[in-house]
Each structure stands twice: as C-alpha cells, then as structure tokens.
Length: 499
Image (tube, rainbow, N blue to C red; front, side, top):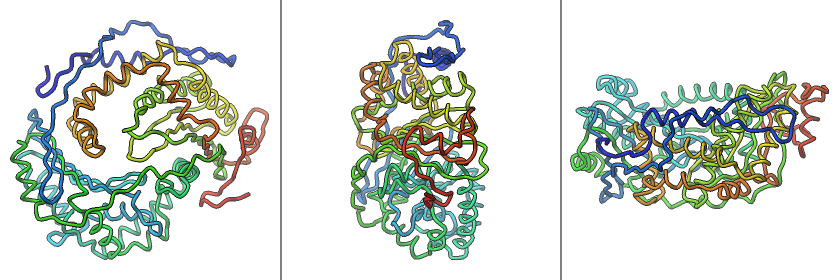
C-alpha cells in the first residue's frame, strides 16, 4: 500500500522482470539472416493480472483571473516541484520570426524590474533551488520549472512570479543571448540529426507551424526587446496558464499563496488555435540531404501520428513499442542484432494537441544504406500486413504498463500527468484506466493502427549523408541506392534544393 495511491500489480522485482522479458526472438521470414539470437527463457516471474491503480487526486481551482491552480500533495519528502505552464510555444511563432517563443522563455531569467540576471541567479542559489524557463520547437507550451525545499515555497513562488510578470528583456543581455544563439545554430546545422529532423518536418507538415524546427540567422538577428515584450504580453496571461505544484504542501495553503502571488495578474484571453488544420498527406518521397564526407547515412521515416485524445492513440503506443520502442523492439533486433548495421534503431510517437509525427530513425554506415533501407521498409510493411503474435503483443503491453508503474514513483512524472489531464480536458480517472486499456489492446487494434499511421503511400523518408559514397556491396552511390526505393530530391545542408 502506497502513501497516496495503491498498486496491486507488479512489485519492483516483477516490474524489472517484465522489462527484461520484452526481448522476444522474432523469426526472419523473408531473409536468410536470422533476425535475432536473443533467446526467451520464460523464467521471469511475471504477474499477468491487470495493474489496478488509483492515482492521488490533485486539488484543482480556477482563480477569478482565469489562472488554473493544481496542487498534488506528496508529503514523503520536504520538497516541492512547481510548474507554470503557459499555453503557447514555438508553434505560435510569427512566420517572420521563428524561435520567438523560445527567445522569450530563455530571456525571462535575464532580468526583471526587481532583479538583474546576477541577482536572480544568486537568489536561486541562496535557496538551494532550481529555476528554468524554456519553450521548444514543435511544442504548444512554454514552461517555467522550479524546485526546492518546501519551507522555501513562498520565496520560490516569488521568483517565479518575478520572471513571469516582470521581465524587462535587457538589451545588453539580449545581444549576448543572440550571439550565443547564432553560434549554437551554426553547430546545429552541422549535426546530421538536426538536418534530418528539419527536412523531415518540412516534408511532412508543409506550411503548418510544426514544419519549423530551428530558428534562422535572420530571425535571431531580428529579435528585439520590443518583439519579445509584445509576444510576452500577448501570450503570458493567466487564462492561458496552469500553475501546478507537487510535494510537501497543503492544497488550501498553496492555493491561497497562488492567489496572493498571481491574483493581480491580468491580460486579454488568447484565442484558441485550431491544431487540426494539417495539410493533406503528401505522396511518399525520399529526401536526401547532401552532407559531404559523411561516414554515415541518417535515416528518418514517418507520417502523421495521433493526438492523445484520439480513440486509437493507445493502439498506436502499443504498435510503436513493438516496432521501435526500445532495444526489445523489431527495428533494434533486426538492424542491430541480426544485421549489425547500426548501434540502434528506434521509433517514437508524440502526444501533443496536434498530430505529432510517428517516426522511425536509425544511423548506419554508408556501405549498408541499401540493406538498412530494405530492412526498415520490411519492418514497416510487416507491422501493417501481419498480425502481431500473442507473445510479442503481450510483451509490449507488459512493458508499457511496467514503465507506467515505475513512473508513479516520481513526483514530477505524476505532476506532469495531471497537467496533461487539465491541458487536454481528459477525465479525472484517465490514468486509473490507462493500464487496463493498454493490457486489453488487441492484435486487431494494433494492426488497424499500423495500417492507418504507417501509411506506406504517404511515408516521408529523409536521409542525411554523402550522395557519392558507396551505399552497398556493389559500390552503388548512396543517391542511386535510394532511387530504388522511390522518388528522390536532393538538398544541401542549408535547405536549398540541388537538383
């Protein structure tokens, strides 16, 4: 029995056993190479009962100014974790200034009407606390995160309020920040993963905001104190914000502290954004980003995924775990264990308010680009065309539920789950039913999700590498190898088309 919630399935030992048990031996049906030498011993003491969990309920209040306050009491340790989540991120950037939301969040700590940047840092250190502000490309939110001892809760809240309500975006600090950003951008544009991510999102999302994955030199240079203030005043308003805390606090006391600290905060409501206006899926195409002298080919392939609120989201999560959700999944066992093409091959699925991509990725030696593409496409077609065997499906479901159970040990994870419930308007018992929904997911549902989201006819594939390097045993150049798998467009590392 836990202090604030109960788990009646999986001891810590059996959770670990379930995670280790997710290493199935999959037969390679189409090729001579044995898919994996991983052997299932069936010795893990796995409890097959469904996880039953009742998460501790937070106290949720909406202040008169529209600010949502969420309090999750956890009294095991004398600490607090506080999150202020603003419902805007780089998805809300103006087209002429990509990165503005991130610039604004990053600059919150660089000076307020009450403290300089140095004074803010000194006050955080004095409290033994942390204070971070960020907004990432592809995100619909910006966050201010703070943590510290519970007896410093009021002082930490004062620091949060100062950076959120009173930022001045000092011109001298902004110039230093822009210089760092330009240097960081130059580094990013040399990284194959960043180049692959950029081209993939542009191919998939077109003119939708998620197509943008990094700022430009021009947008960094164009960032001014006035533009940051304008963005802040428009989006940093209480009706667009969730204030959440977990830890050693009492709900009524923290709500009163939130009212005292943020009660005078006002602003015009932010119009709701329609995140459903995605461009129609484009026909499948291969994009090759020319990176001269690259010794590897970075491969990314994917299509639109599902939103957390979509009815088949959990089926997609289970499908993803089977295909590429870890070292026990098919891509890893095939491309690494069976063929030795790579150190790792994975897939992932997002859960934002828009349809984040379902995407598979790997990095392989130039000479095995052909074989890697062949095996990648084989696995993507197999998950669509064949029902998942019961043993493999059971392993995936157990693995997801085990990971969920372990996450309940972490106060910050619990808080994030409740923020998500508020943000998406999910029912308060959503997480109570989540393990059972995973455990009951059928092979038919997983295959239906695969056929919907692993859309071969609209799959967007991006490769970053040297087009002239041999891509197979026959010494065919990488460019010619890729043409065997579809129409190819070539771009340079600055995003300009070459052919």
